[in-house]
Length: 276
Length: 325
Ligand SMILES: Nc1ncnc2c1ncn2[C@@H]1O[C@H](COP(=O)(O)OP(=O)(O)O)[C@@H](O)[C@H]1O
Ligand SMILES: [Mg+2]
Image (cartoon, rainbow over all chains, first blue to last red; front, side, top):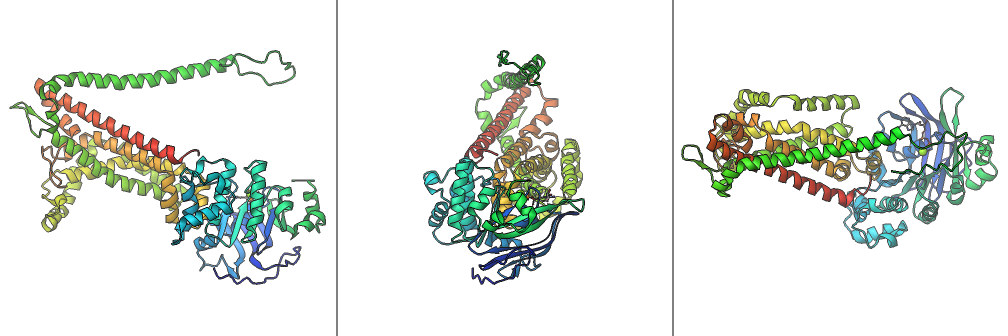
């Protein structure tokens, strides 16, 4: 697609100004599940060719924010979004925007590996066929599987079910499926939480390779993972002062700064492991 | 069953311990009952086959396999053949399967894929399942007094305009294959719909998310992901529906016209094995009863074969792509 990245001022009070081009800017006003205010005013810019990590205690709304970036939350009937998410300057929550189109440019990898009950090949070719790809399908499938670092393991069994693979392989298959159509942005919601340490390492290496071509937003529960792969880290907290549990962005900045020299007391306590 | 209880481990002060003897007895007892029930069901099927087979044997030795290919059923001359009934059984059931299958699966999609609010979907599902509670004879009466008069003008118009199409080759004078198949379709609808609903409900939410996450439209998600993933369950629904259609008796006996003909026409009267049995048994003499027993055996065989094929297809589909859930 013809991407004209534009610079947008980062709006969050405590986020230091990003240096690169902003692909997406998520300006949340309020996010509700029914009457429950899940996330309040937070601005999260996503920079091009960087990995933006989302960390914070569970229930602070990391997944909610991430899934707002490609309108995945539209699947939940009680979900309500107030605010703006600009993607190359266009608000994806604009009434004129079809969420289906948004999701074709902004791919997603989920916490649980979720390959389709079809062959490995068909899993990877799914998005290509969906988008009416007319070129050499075999070539693109191979490229995606290589890109997801699982070609060598599956090249001899492309006709086998995607569900016959191990958890780690399934997750890399899902990454291959997501990158086959070369989306612009890749959203990853705790992609390693169901994986063993070796598979986790491989997926992390993969993310570092992928950011050369894509822009990645990564939710992680694992702070070491954030320090290993994220260029920018957004720390979310939970505000319980109103008698409810509302998530919000506490602080966002270069990963090193968040972990070594946080501006907020809460961030420091969290990254030192004083609460979770 | 484990008998070693780590008695040498000092457990003083701990609440951990082996399951009680009662737990083991219950487990063993339950297993026994389950086995017994399974064996009993198997024995029952074998017994039924043997019993009917035994009663059909005299007719089988008399008419041989010619019984399956002959088209007359004449008590006076003692000529018996059930080809028209076999044809009518398969044809009406197939039609019912196509109509009931399409609508049943469509209803299941409608009820499970967020077209309706959850409560409303549950209400709708209950209503559809209530269709299964209507007695067969009521369907038959409804067919005679409502459906046939309603269909007749349409059928006769179709015959008049498109009589050259084999399906419309005759006019509809009263009972016939078309009305029978339609009623049959409604009768198998609850089976097909509710088993398909269960199959679609069993597709994990994460699979649905994966589909929408790839940027599918709702229909792309349904057709390319949800239906294939629920495929073996939907296949099971169709097989069970077909099995039910094959054996349905009362409504068909009332609606199909009980006529020994083989015709592609939807409007021609026909007959099915079950309807033949139901309508002929009450007044049958000993010779005819033997022939009817043979026909019953054939019906049983058809039903068993269809179910076996269905199971085999399902097993194949499952083995191929559903390694785990
Ligand atoms: N589908 C949902 N319906 C209702 N509440 C939800 C739903 N998903 C998440 N929530 C609530 O929103 C809050 C944020 O959840 P989530 O974004 O999943 O947090 P995180 O990913 O940081 O653990 C939690 O309080 C959670 O209970
Ligand atoms: Mg989460």
